Length: 223
Ligand code: AP5
Image (tube, rainbow, N blue to C red; front, side, top):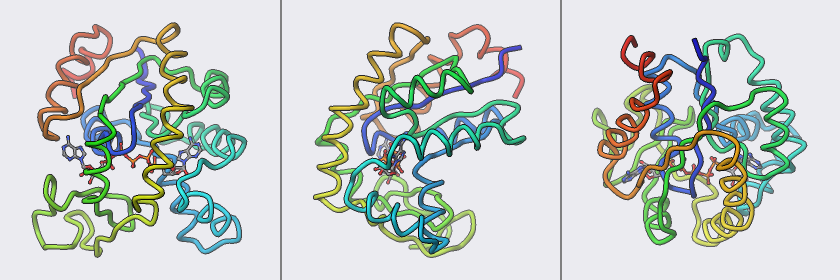
């Protein structure tokens, strides 16, 4: 049986975190978001966390040496043994070649979204300190306004969801991460999903495409 080793790619706000979380729960695999791991380090108030915050909050990428080491270590942990979905990694060619050495992906999911829609979405995003993601209009919490449905913690806006940082992040996406997509097209099976429709439609369309992949279809049917 193929163990799912999935990578979800797309511009900021495409819904990588949103869809990866749902798919990971469906397949009982681990959702690893490099952004969440980096934000956890910031929340620990360590010296490293302060250095990371200065980079992330202005919309730049942390050095690949850092994200590569982090992902190599994380994907080797026991909770990834049954499969994983990497969200936010790789974003540069040097990260993609590094990942080949310790966890060659068997499927790339590309969420396609225009820059205009990305900016609109990020301005309404709210997150809880543990990483659960909401949107003021498209995906508000169901239990208590302004609080996370999963852990009750107060929701807040991400420090890098400012207009200036969003513009810089999208620019880096077009310059660096789109090259990763081209690189993967020749090496790993890729499915493309239109990320403009509402969350449940994007999920439905993604699942339809995943069910058409024989080795994954059997796993989706049993879980
Ligand atoms: P990261 O946290 O990965 O941020 P990002 O790449 O900018 O992506 P986003 O989280 O903004 O978008 P998403 O596609 O996950 O959208 P979401 O599901 O939240 O990285 C943050 C930073 O860490 C980077 O800028 C960099 O500095 C650093 N970093 C991370 N990885 C790195 C790496 N590999 N190398 C170097 N540095 C790295 O959805 C967005 C909003 O839209 C939410 O409010 C959601 O509710 C809503 N939404 C989602 N889908 C829909 C829909 N279909 N319709 C309507 N609303 C929707």
